[in-house]
Amino acid sequence: MTVDNPTASPVSVHFRAAQSHDGAALWRLAQATGTLEVNSAYFYLLFATDFARTCLIAEHEGRLVGMLIGYQPPNEPRTAFVWQVGVLPEHQGQGLGLRLLQHWLDLPALSACEFVTATVADDNPASQALFRRLARSHGVACEERPHFTADMFPHEHPPEPLFRVGPIPRGALMPH
Ligand SMILES: CC(C)(COP(=O)(O)OP(=O)(O)OC[C@H]1O[C@@H](n2cnc3c(N)ncnc32)[C@H](O)[C@@H]1OP(=O)(O)O)[C@@H](O)C(=O)NCCC(=O)NCCS
Image (cartoon, rainbow, N blue to C red; front, top):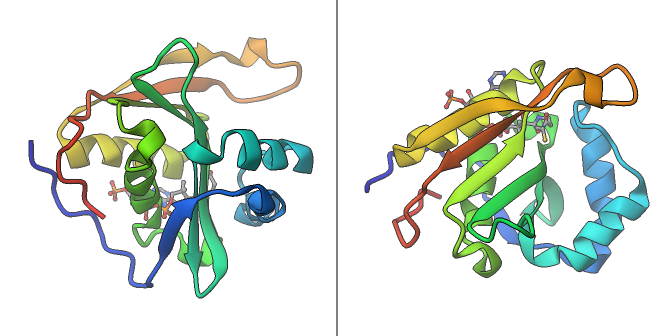
């Protein structure tokens, strides 16, 4: 299956798997996005350590400009779950979010994953557009169904439906 060409980000960006020492910078980036729910710094240290193989860093001129924190759900070996994806505000809207997803799927730890899932809050159009765009790029479906409903949260929170993109043919040429 062919994939169409994503918008190319005009800046040169280096992508790599996360390392333990990235935890603090991931926490700062989550804050800088202005939209993400910022978890404790410990949480980012933990992900950058125990889930480093499924977390991606994007750097421009040595500075962290984007991140994708994810994991493989233990009961779904063919699925890669996006927990948080974020791009610095000044780099948003230039194709970097899509490139993060593509490079993330290229990580060896995710090579068997044909589905990408994420919960996307109803009030986050950029995130909705990103996952729908990923699906379009591969000519596959983006299923959207209720998942974490508002009543499941301990405080006021918009619903977080589940987006499920796939099946993405692995080994296909990925747009970067
Ligand atoms: C969501 C996010 C990662 C997308 O990254 P990005 O680099 O801006 O996205 P891209 O440039 O690759 O664009 C991907 C799609 O999103 C759309 N998009 C980007 N910003 C948008 C916005 N503010 N509103 C609506 N759509 C938007 C693009 O138009 C594109 O869709 P299209 O191809 O149908 O036109 C980025 O906006 C971000 O960091 N937001 C704050 C953090 C966040 O909310 N993360 C998601 C929840 S975990």
